[in-house]
Length: 332
Image 1 (cartoon, rainbow, N blue to C red):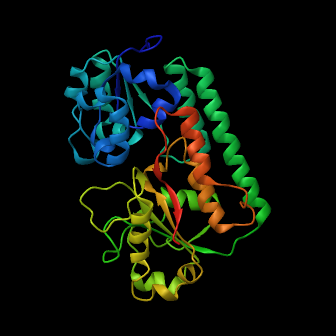
Image 2: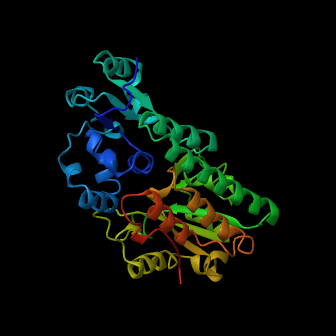
């Protein structure tokens, strides 16, 4: 199928911020439908910031969410896009017949992939967006930045040698009374692997799931990462992200350290408990989170690196909104 030179009608399934980073703020006017839930429900603080800047997002048709089986090919087609930009997990959910049905309606399907967490896919996806949206130079600038920051991170890690620190990450969604998911492969595990961390969930969990409290205590992690977001109706969650309160984040993080046995963990004794924004990973700005984790593991090698300032600078340069909130933090 031949793509239009620059599509004027786009259905956007995921990677909302990455699309805007490459295509620019004016590209919002080309959106005719969204898979809304992964943005509005998974990252409500982020959604609020973007709908304040672009109120038209609120009224765009919603073609559903592949994760809860509400994805509607018919609704996507009814919005009459020229192109549907989807994630790999969305194309997998609808399968080849679903992709063929969209294409049969005269709609091109473009799949991009930041979820793979490889440098190659990040750069390729960025350049595909640039070619599609006639923003080749901007896409190349972003790809070059991402590649350079990743190379700098890896060079610092290589120069530092083994950190010797064990690291534990937990999805801090339901408070200290409930053990949240950790990651054995992909997501935060992928970042820990990239920077050479010793992830205590490795080999214990295939992808994600909770580790037993006894196992965590026995592993004596030197660094603890609490992954937080802007969740609604989660009264004990670690709330991080757009518009979140640093004092409340500190309070919620501190509550985790009151778990039985945690006061004796090396990470708690030495103050190596960190909060990290769950919505920031697997994006064009996720090099910042890799550097935040690497800084915890190799503090001397990253002494001059300020991940929060790097994220703020990325948003100032490439995004239509500011990174106002809390995205990386350390328990005081």
